[in-house]
Length: 110
Length: 114
Image 1: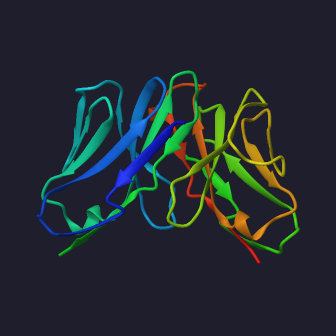
Image 2: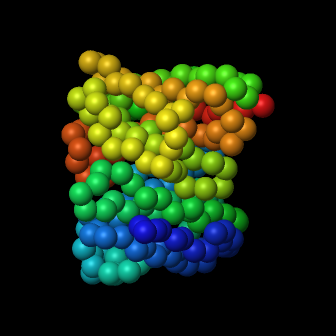
């Protein structure tokens, strides 16, 4: 069965303290892996799409990487405004729906 | 350029009642997908509409039904509401049945069943 697991569930960082979020997946034929940011009471906001192992994408303080079994979202020198829940989703080949993980709730303290 | 618009933003219903949620897709998009997000969980796929037809469906009972109109807007209907149906309902639009980077989510409708 297709599954997406994110860890940790919650992460508290001091401003400037770099860290990584993990997304491991099992899916038959990965069509794409997606990272979203979700603020409280809002819908997910698209961050990155990764399609093949070895691919990397960067945006400001965020960098996403992909292997055959997992993806990492690296956060470099985070700021309080990076506080949010980060969701990982995979799209399986032949399907147009996403399988979402439960998310990592990131809290960055000033 | 308006994004995805959902209405209402909040709704309180009594167990056993029926509810209709509405979604207007982003301008230029023609596909609408609906997701249910329970508190502290990731969104779960309900179904997807394209060309006014349901194209894919997740593991949700027949109490959940939908519709897409010629202007691409969509409705999600839930009958015989249960307490467990309380959640944030998200609508996502895209162009065609393409890849996920083109998905735009609305801010959701918070449904509370009492």
